[in-house]
Length: 431
Image (cartoon, rainbow, N blue to C red; front, side, top):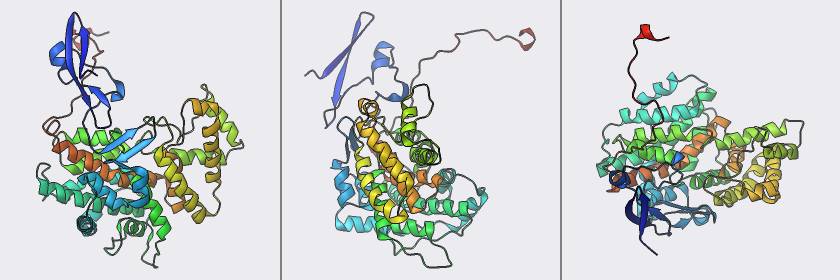
């Protein structure tokens, strides 16, 4: 097979290299296309553009494969925990026992926020969306923690990574407590990552709070499944903003803002809101399925299909098993869960869904688990952000370690479609 590609244009031939990844994905190197031919490529949404060479996450959407650093997601979900998976994503290899203990210790001992950050939370209105608070507070950390700031200094980067991993759960819990008018709960060094977050979310000073191990394990599983997903909107945002040379806090804050959107991290909230709409309607589930299949009806069923996966989302299979256990345990019987099961059966057997490969995705069941845990709808994406954090850090770190990208600011091109050159008309002459 040739390792060259040719583009013929205006009687000229442009030859360029074919690149191949370790999983045999092939790409045409167009890095010198414009300088050689004057042409650029047009690719709305960059859906056919490989902007980086990355060793972090591999996805095969046709086969339903997801691997972090080569490890299948099912193995990590069954055998790892979120802290270890975070280390894997950020550093590239599974840690030794000593490396994992050191990583966990550093995170544990950086969970406290500076006390002079508290007025920042108090300044937000009570009904502020927690994603807005999370993004703003993350950007603000760059002002509170300026002693390790340089993205080119390995020591500064290491400390900043510990701070982000440790403090974002504290920020997220504070945003939640602010929204319900309860006092902030300080982190506890005796607790693990997920247990500490649950304690800060749900404990109150008036009485002891007991952490349910099964709930903590389910949340830890969700964080693992959300930890990275290749060059998605928010990961690409972190890379693009980070390429400007800004500190890691600002780059991660931009990623949080990107994740906030309903088309990205907010999809699981859409699922639950749709299930509530079906539950509270006079129509049965079949009626809503019929509406979703009608091109003339704006109604859509969120949680089905994926931009990348053309097979069953491997994360959805894992989450469904967790939902079966956790939702039943916490709620006894949840009508929304039953509606979700009915919809899944339709998706797996109805020709309309099967032909279009509209299988349930990761958002379909995750929101039901968050709801059963007692999280309000606007906190769903916040928890998603906590899970995605190590992936963002890994993407940002890889960008700075890669000689092809660390000195290159992201700068997409465009096809200009506006007015050609024209003369300025004085105001009094305009009609």
